[in-house]
Image 1 (cartoon, rainbow, N blue to C red):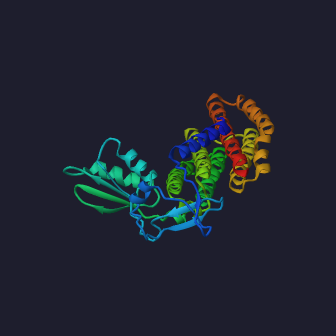
Image 2: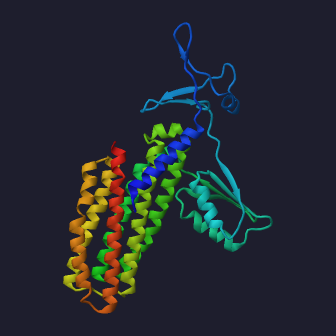
Length: 347
């Protein structure tokens, strides 16, 4: 993946969007020297602004001025209605990601048992989404989270912590033949997915809410970076679960010392790269970010050695080990992509 090219395309699209919705106004001055501009009529009417109305203004860290016509109004919950369908799970997740506070599932006559179970299973995958009302024809889901209490960096740190422990334990389970630990790794993948969905929801809310953006000290352009970084961390969780599945498929077969040491060395490089990549992203540390990419030569040397050793093992074991070192290579590549996101953030 060329992450820099992908990010630049996102930035270009975002700037084009801003230009499309932007309306220019000429600054004027009064006789006393006061600066003023007129408000767009359509916007004023839409927000109930009349002569004598009071609005709030605030300056952002980058010098922009935000005009808020509803600073003293209670936030109106966003409500959406959907119907039971073969795509019910996807519909619920989609509404959650779009930032809806209340999701109503309504049936013409009755919601069947299978659909009720699908709703419960889907809501359990989404942090903060709870069933608050249920009868024969309706199920009401509500997100009980307050976005301002969930800074994106904290969510990403938690997602990172779990994914790190996943591939560490996945390799440990492989070497020790611990099938139970391998199953535990796979179970943890659901929690990484939950955090990823939550972060996407928060980021979309920030983009739509300038006040929240200022309060959390994260701006729309940063949201693109966070979305990509979180997606890569989530992908690493999936790769870790695949490594764990190989241990289960091998039925707890223990590996000999030679290949175990090679895999531990390979994983040590991957673990450090993953850890340093996210740290560099969150701290905007370009030096640390560059060091992740600079370790590729050492990584490829250990990779080739592990690959060579695996070819001396019985076919079934060799096949699994080759797949595992390939998965570890993908984890390293994803870590490099995360570190690449640091450079534009640091400018």
